[in-house]
Amino acid sequence: MKITDGTGGGYAANVDEYNRLHVQSITATAQHEASERGDAYQVIGETATLTSATTTILHIKNTSSTQEAVFTYFRMQTADDNVTIPAIAQYFAIGFGRTYSSGGTLTVPTCMNTGSGNVAPLTCYGNSPTLTGTNVEFEKAWNKVEAEMYTYNKGGSIILAPNKTIEIYYVGTATAGRALARASFYMQPAGGHQ
Picture 1: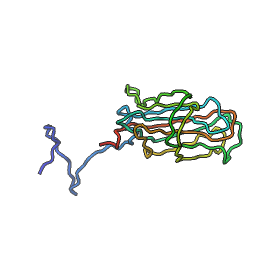
Picture 2: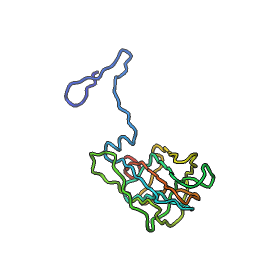
Picture 3: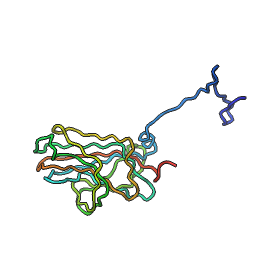
Picture 4: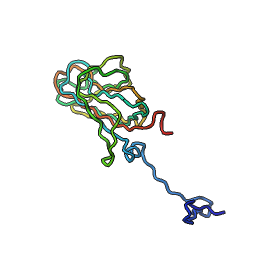
């Protein structure tokens, strides 16, 4: 029996003396594959000034009815705040569920494939937008030193379904300084790749 490539080129598969078929494969992360398709993005949110309360750094809504956003990585950081850290009262958090009401600064995700014209179907606000509703917090992290960058690598396990929201916020007593957050994500059909 002969195994050929099926394209009419007449190329045969290589089988060794142990009856093993020789193949070649390329492995890539889902984020890399999405970037090749033009479906991988990053979005940055920033606050103008921290206030002594809960400060939303970045609020994201998936406005698509057919795609879900798969989050792979988050980065959060403060700089020039006027509090002593680490401290229990100063932390970053991520949660689901609240709705944008007003204010803040509209920020647009950037496609990570410079050859693609794709635009992420997400609406994002930074700089302390006003939000309503109930927040479901699922991650909390304390900075250990000033200007330390906290990273949260989820490898695609946080999925934002159509018309759902996620936010990154800072809780603390600072009355000076800034906070920054970055989210990396890719888009895929709702329900996963079919």
